Length: 320
Image (cartoon, rainbow, N blue to C red; front, side, top):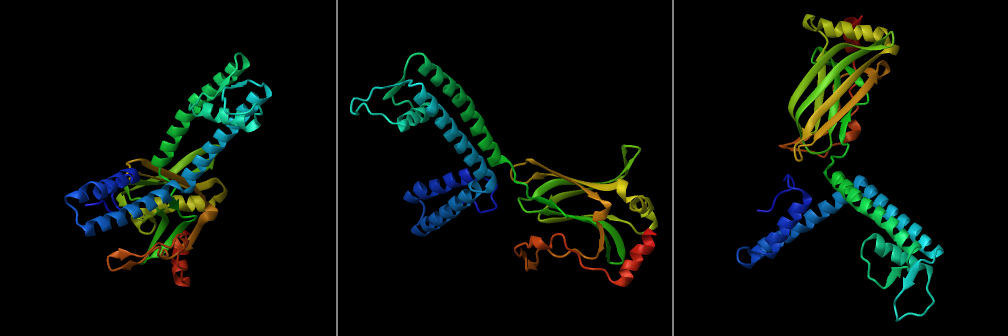
Protein backbone atom coordinates (compact mmCIF):
# COMPACT_ATOMS: atom_id res chain seq x y z
CA UNK A 1 0.00 0.00 0.00
CA UNK A 2 1.46 3.39 -1.00
CA UNK A 3 1.26 6.02 1.76
CA UNK A 4 -1.56 8.54 1.38
CA UNK A 5 -1.18 12.33 1.53
CA UNK A 6 -1.51 12.39 5.31
CA UNK A 7 1.44 10.07 5.79
CA UNK A 8 4.13 11.51 8.11
CA UNK A 9 6.87 10.11 5.89
CA UNK A 10 9.06 12.81 4.35
CA UNK A 11 8.61 13.46 0.64
CA UNK A 12 11.96 11.85 -0.25
CA UNK A 13 11.05 8.59 1.49
CA UNK A 14 7.63 8.58 -0.18
CA UNK A 15 9.23 9.01 -3.60
CA UNK A 16 11.68 6.15 -2.97
CA UNK A 17 8.83 3.98 -1.68
CA UNK A 18 6.76 4.71 -4.80
CA UNK A 19 9.68 3.89 -7.09
CA UNK A 20 10.23 0.62 -5.24
CA UNK A 21 6.58 -0.35 -5.68
CA UNK A 22 6.65 0.51 -9.38
CA UNK A 23 10.03 -0.91 -10.40
CA UNK A 24 10.51 -3.94 -8.17
CA UNK A 25 7.19 -5.25 -6.95
CA UNK A 26 5.27 -5.35 -10.27
CA UNK A 27 7.61 -8.03 -11.64
CA UNK A 28 5.96 -10.68 -9.53
CA UNK A 29 3.13 -9.22 -7.51
CA UNK A 30 1.39 -6.18 -8.92
CA UNK A 31 -1.15 -6.21 -11.70
CA UNK A 32 -1.18 -3.73 -14.56
CA UNK A 33 -3.85 -1.74 -12.72
CA UNK A 34 -1.67 -1.46 -9.63
CA UNK A 35 1.23 -0.37 -11.81
CA UNK A 36 -0.87 2.40 -13.33
CA UNK A 37 -2.06 3.53 -9.90
CA UNK A 38 1.53 3.50 -8.68
CA UNK A 39 2.61 5.71 -11.57
CA UNK A 40 -0.19 8.15 -10.85
CA UNK A 41 0.73 8.28 -7.16
CA UNK A 42 4.42 8.72 -7.99
CA UNK A 43 3.60 11.66 -10.25
CA UNK A 44 1.53 13.27 -7.52
CA UNK A 45 4.20 12.68 -4.90
CA UNK A 46 6.92 14.17 -7.11
CA UNK A 47 4.77 17.20 -7.84
CA UNK A 48 4.07 17.66 -4.13
CA UNK A 49 7.77 17.37 -3.40
CA UNK A 50 8.61 19.89 -6.12
CA UNK A 51 6.01 22.27 -4.75
CA UNK A 52 7.57 21.95 -1.30
CA UNK A 53 11.09 22.48 -2.60
CA UNK A 54 10.04 25.51 -4.63
CA UNK A 55 8.28 27.26 -1.79
CA UNK A 56 9.68 30.69 -1.03
CA UNK A 57 11.80 29.63 1.97
CA UNK A 58 13.67 26.88 0.12
CA UNK A 59 13.80 28.77 -3.16
CA UNK A 60 15.31 31.89 -1.60
CA UNK A 61 17.90 29.85 0.27
CA UNK A 62 18.97 28.00 -2.87
CA UNK A 63 19.11 31.21 -4.91
CA UNK A 64 21.24 32.89 -2.24
CA UNK A 65 23.64 29.94 -2.28
CA UNK A 66 23.88 29.98 -6.08
CA UNK A 67 24.46 33.73 -6.05
CA UNK A 68 27.27 33.34 -3.52
CA UNK A 69 28.85 30.57 -5.61
CA UNK A 70 28.73 32.70 -8.78
CA UNK A 71 30.15 35.71 -6.95
CA UNK A 72 33.08 33.72 -5.51
CA UNK A 73 33.77 32.12 -8.89
CA UNK A 74 33.85 35.51 -10.61
CA UNK A 75 36.03 37.15 -7.95
CA UNK A 76 38.64 34.41 -8.04
CA UNK A 77 38.43 34.22 -11.84
CA UNK A 78 39.36 37.91 -11.89
CA UNK A 79 42.26 37.27 -9.51
CA UNK A 80 43.62 34.46 -11.69
CA UNK A 81 43.25 36.70 -14.75
CA UNK A 82 44.87 39.84 -13.35
CA UNK A 83 47.80 37.99 -11.81
CA UNK A 84 48.21 35.72 -14.86
CA UNK A 85 48.54 32.85 -12.43
CA UNK A 86 47.41 29.86 -14.54
CA UNK A 87 49.30 27.42 -16.74
CA UNK A 88 47.25 26.06 -19.68
CA UNK A 89 48.33 22.48 -20.46
CA UNK A 90 45.81 21.65 -23.17
CA UNK A 91 47.71 20.83 -26.38
CA UNK A 92 44.60 20.96 -28.55
CA UNK A 93 44.13 24.66 -28.17
CA UNK A 94 45.89 27.73 -29.47
CA UNK A 95 47.76 30.16 -27.30
CA UNK A 96 44.84 32.59 -27.35
CA UNK A 97 43.07 32.18 -24.05
CA UNK A 98 40.04 34.09 -22.90
CA UNK A 99 38.81 35.48 -19.63
CA UNK A 100 36.20 32.71 -19.50
CA UNK A 101 39.02 30.16 -19.19
CA UNK A 102 39.96 31.76 -15.89
CA UNK A 103 36.33 31.70 -14.74
CA UNK A 104 36.15 28.04 -15.78
CA UNK A 105 39.23 27.18 -13.69
CA UNK A 106 37.80 29.07 -10.72
CA UNK A 107 34.53 27.13 -11.02
CA UNK A 108 36.12 23.68 -11.21
CA UNK A 109 38.47 24.57 -8.35
CA UNK A 110 35.66 25.79 -6.09
CA UNK A 111 33.64 22.63 -6.73
CA UNK A 112 36.79 20.42 -6.23
CA UNK A 113 36.39 18.87 -9.71
CA UNK A 114 39.87 19.74 -10.96
CA UNK A 115 40.16 18.25 -14.47
CA UNK A 116 43.88 19.01 -14.70
CA UNK A 117 43.78 20.74 -18.08
CA UNK A 118 44.65 24.01 -16.33
CA UNK A 119 46.92 24.27 -13.29
CA UNK A 120 48.00 27.22 -11.15
CA UNK A 121 51.45 28.66 -11.51
CA UNK A 122 53.84 28.49 -8.60
CA UNK A 123 53.68 31.33 -6.12
CA UNK A 124 50.68 33.61 -6.51
CA UNK A 125 48.66 30.94 -8.35
CA UNK A 126 49.06 28.46 -5.50
CA UNK A 127 48.17 31.15 -2.97
CA UNK A 128 44.94 32.11 -4.72
CA UNK A 129 43.92 28.44 -5.07
CA UNK A 130 44.62 27.92 -1.36
CA UNK A 131 42.38 30.86 -0.37
CA UNK A 132 39.57 29.73 -2.70
CA UNK A 133 39.82 26.17 -1.35
CA UNK A 134 39.49 27.43 2.24
CA UNK A 135 36.29 29.28 1.31
CA UNK A 136 34.95 26.18 -0.47
CA UNK A 137 35.65 23.93 2.51
CA UNK A 138 33.54 26.28 4.64
CA UNK A 139 30.79 27.04 2.15
CA UNK A 140 29.57 23.59 1.15
CA UNK A 141 29.14 22.08 4.65
CA UNK A 142 27.48 25.23 5.99
CA UNK A 143 25.23 25.68 2.96
CA UNK A 144 24.29 21.99 2.88
CA UNK A 145 23.45 22.01 6.56
CA UNK A 146 21.39 25.17 6.19
CA UNK A 147 19.42 23.68 3.30
CA UNK A 148 18.69 20.59 5.43
CA UNK A 149 17.57 22.85 8.27
CA UNK A 150 15.21 24.72 5.93
CA UNK A 151 13.68 21.44 4.77
CA UNK A 152 13.02 20.35 8.34
CA UNK A 153 11.93 23.75 9.62
CA UNK A 154 8.19 24.28 9.77
CA UNK A 155 7.08 27.41 7.89
CA UNK A 156 5.55 30.32 9.77
CA UNK A 157 1.97 29.17 9.28
CA UNK A 158 0.49 29.76 12.75
CA UNK A 159 -1.75 32.82 13.07
CA UNK A 160 -3.19 34.91 15.86
CA UNK A 161 -6.04 37.34 15.26
CA UNK A 162 -5.06 40.95 14.70
CA UNK A 163 -7.39 42.02 17.50
CA UNK A 164 -8.51 40.84 20.90
CA UNK A 165 -12.27 40.65 21.24
CA UNK A 166 -14.79 41.16 24.01
CA UNK A 167 -17.51 38.91 22.67
CA UNK A 168 -21.11 38.37 23.63
CA UNK A 169 -22.10 34.82 22.82
CA UNK A 170 -24.86 32.56 24.19
CA UNK A 171 -25.74 35.15 26.87
CA UNK A 172 -22.17 35.14 28.14
CA UNK A 173 -19.29 37.60 27.81
CA UNK A 174 -15.81 36.43 26.87
CA UNK A 175 -12.40 37.93 26.28
CA UNK A 176 -11.36 36.07 23.14
CA UNK A 177 -8.70 35.50 20.55
CA UNK A 178 -8.36 32.86 17.87
CA UNK A 179 -5.45 30.73 16.65
CA UNK A 180 -5.25 29.67 13.02
CA UNK A 181 -3.19 26.70 11.84
CA UNK A 182 -2.43 26.51 8.11
CA UNK A 183 0.00 23.60 8.40
CA UNK A 184 0.13 20.13 9.91
CA UNK A 185 -1.85 19.44 13.06
CA UNK A 186 -0.40 20.59 16.38
CA UNK A 187 -0.37 18.42 19.48
CA UNK A 188 0.15 19.14 23.20
CA UNK A 189 -0.66 22.81 22.73
CA UNK A 190 -0.51 25.45 25.45
CA UNK A 191 -1.81 29.03 25.24
CA UNK A 192 -1.14 31.68 27.84
CA UNK A 193 -2.97 34.97 28.43
CA UNK A 194 -1.14 37.64 30.40
CA UNK A 195 -2.53 41.02 31.44
CA UNK A 196 0.49 43.31 31.58
CA UNK A 197 0.75 46.85 32.90
CA UNK A 198 3.74 49.18 32.97
CA UNK A 199 4.18 51.18 36.20
CA UNK A 200 7.30 53.08 37.30
CA UNK A 201 9.21 51.62 34.35
CA UNK A 202 8.45 48.09 35.57
CA UNK A 203 6.39 45.54 33.67
CA UNK A 204 3.89 43.85 35.99
CA UNK A 205 1.72 40.84 35.24
CA UNK A 206 -1.75 41.44 36.66
CA UNK A 207 -3.26 38.14 35.55
CA UNK A 208 -2.02 34.98 33.91
CA UNK A 209 -4.26 32.24 32.52
CA UNK A 210 -3.21 29.04 30.77
CA UNK A 211 -5.31 27.05 28.30
CA UNK A 212 -4.35 23.60 27.03
CA UNK A 213 -5.47 21.56 24.03
CA UNK A 214 -4.29 18.05 23.11
CA UNK A 215 -4.83 18.70 19.38
CA UNK A 216 -5.25 21.79 17.19
CA UNK A 217 -6.38 21.06 13.66
CA UNK A 218 -7.26 24.33 11.91
CA UNK A 219 -8.61 26.82 14.47
CA UNK A 220 -8.46 27.14 18.24
CA UNK A 221 -10.53 29.55 20.30
CA UNK A 222 -8.82 31.12 23.31
CA UNK A 223 -11.32 32.53 25.78
CA UNK A 224 -11.59 33.88 29.30
CA UNK A 225 -15.12 34.26 30.62
CA UNK A 226 -15.77 37.70 32.14
CA UNK A 227 -19.33 37.55 33.50
CA UNK A 228 -20.33 35.85 36.74
CA UNK A 229 -19.03 36.30 40.27
CA UNK A 230 -16.46 33.52 39.83
CA UNK A 231 -14.76 35.61 37.13
CA UNK A 232 -14.66 38.86 39.09
CA UNK A 233 -10.84 38.89 39.28
CA UNK A 234 -10.41 38.70 35.49
CA UNK A 235 -13.07 41.34 34.98
CA UNK A 236 -11.57 43.78 37.48
CA UNK A 237 -8.08 43.45 36.04
CA UNK A 238 -9.46 44.10 32.57
CA UNK A 239 -11.24 47.22 33.83
CA UNK A 240 -7.95 48.45 35.29
CA UNK A 241 -6.25 48.00 31.93
CA UNK A 242 -9.04 49.68 29.99
CA UNK A 243 -8.90 52.69 32.33
CA UNK A 244 -5.14 52.99 31.75
CA UNK A 245 -4.78 52.07 28.07
CA UNK A 246 -1.41 53.71 27.38
CA UNK A 247 0.39 51.52 29.91
CA UNK A 248 -1.49 48.25 29.44
CA UNK A 249 -1.31 45.34 27.02
CA UNK A 250 -2.24 41.70 26.62
CA UNK A 251 0.35 39.11 25.68
CA UNK A 252 -0.67 35.80 24.14
CA UNK A 253 1.82 32.96 23.86
CA UNK A 254 1.19 29.78 21.85
CA UNK A 255 3.32 26.64 21.86
CA UNK A 256 2.82 23.13 20.56
CA UNK A 257 4.46 20.33 18.59
CA UNK A 258 4.18 19.59 14.89
CA UNK A 259 2.32 16.29 14.57
CA UNK A 260 4.66 15.09 11.78
CA UNK A 261 8.14 16.22 12.74
CA UNK A 262 7.69 16.68 16.48
CA UNK A 263 9.36 20.09 16.22
CA UNK A 264 8.34 22.75 18.72
CA UNK A 265 6.18 25.52 17.27
CA UNK A 266 6.07 28.79 19.18
CA UNK A 267 4.33 32.13 18.65
CA UNK A 268 3.59 35.15 20.81
CA UNK A 269 1.92 38.49 20.24
CA UNK A 270 1.31 41.71 22.17
CA UNK A 271 -2.03 43.52 21.97
CA UNK A 272 -2.38 47.13 23.05
CA UNK A 273 -5.74 48.36 24.31
CA UNK A 274 -6.63 49.95 20.97
CA UNK A 275 -6.71 46.38 19.58
CA UNK A 276 -9.51 45.45 22.00
CA UNK A 277 -12.84 45.54 20.16
CA UNK A 278 -16.38 44.29 20.70
CA UNK A 279 -18.00 41.57 18.64
CA UNK A 280 -20.19 38.52 18.54
CA UNK A 281 -19.57 35.16 16.91
CA UNK A 282 -16.34 34.58 14.99
CA UNK A 283 -16.86 34.30 11.24
CA UNK A 284 -16.38 30.78 9.94
CA UNK A 285 -13.05 30.02 8.30
CA UNK A 286 -14.47 26.79 6.88
CA UNK A 287 -17.70 24.81 6.81
CA UNK A 288 -18.53 21.16 7.19
CA UNK A 289 -20.02 19.26 4.29
CA UNK A 290 -20.91 15.96 5.88
CA UNK A 291 -17.71 14.79 7.51
CA UNK A 292 -15.42 16.86 5.29
CA UNK A 293 -14.27 20.43 5.66
CA UNK A 294 -14.47 22.93 2.85
CA UNK A 295 -11.30 24.73 1.78
CA UNK A 296 -10.52 27.37 4.44
CA UNK A 297 -11.09 31.03 3.66
CA UNK A 298 -8.54 32.83 5.82
CA UNK A 299 -9.93 36.25 4.89
CA UNK A 300 -12.60 35.56 7.54
CA UNK A 301 -10.06 34.77 10.23
CA UNK A 302 -10.10 38.22 11.90
CA UNK A 303 -13.82 38.87 11.47
CA UNK A 304 -16.65 38.73 14.02
CA UNK A 305 -20.33 39.38 13.66
CA UNK A 306 -21.47 42.82 14.93
CA UNK A 307 -23.30 43.18 18.23
CA UNK A 308 -26.88 44.29 18.62
CA UNK A 309 -27.49 47.41 20.77
CA UNK A 310 -28.79 45.23 23.59
CA UNK A 311 -25.69 43.00 23.51
CA UNK A 312 -23.46 46.06 23.48
CA UNK A 313 -25.28 47.42 26.51
CA UNK A 314 -24.76 44.15 28.43
CA UNK A 315 -20.99 44.42 27.92
CA UNK A 316 -20.91 48.12 28.82
CA UNK A 317 -22.83 47.46 32.04
CA UNK A 318 -20.47 44.62 32.93
CA UNK A 319 -17.29 46.65 32.46
CA UNK A 320 -18.49 49.90 34.03
